[in-house]
Image (cartoon, rainbow, N blue to C red; front, side, top):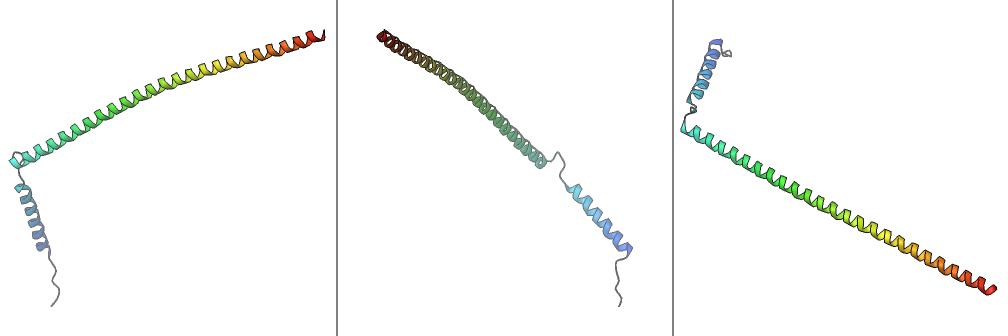
Length: 121
């Protein structure tokens, strides 16, 4: 006995049956006005709206956080400027004290020199 393979007619019949089954499958699908489909669409819409609400809340919270950080940075900059001004004033006062001390030391040195000159005369 020889091997008897599928002939063209068998293959064509099988393909036609497959097309029929596929068409029946799509015909059996529920229509857009089916309550189950409408319920699923409503659920998807609710999920999408909830997602949008979460994203909006997240964006609002992020904006508030950025505003808070900007305010902190502004206050920190003001405090740093105040500290720099105080440091500058302290440096000026220290320099003034040094100059006054140097002037007093020079006056004392000049007084000693004058006293020594007066003794020699």
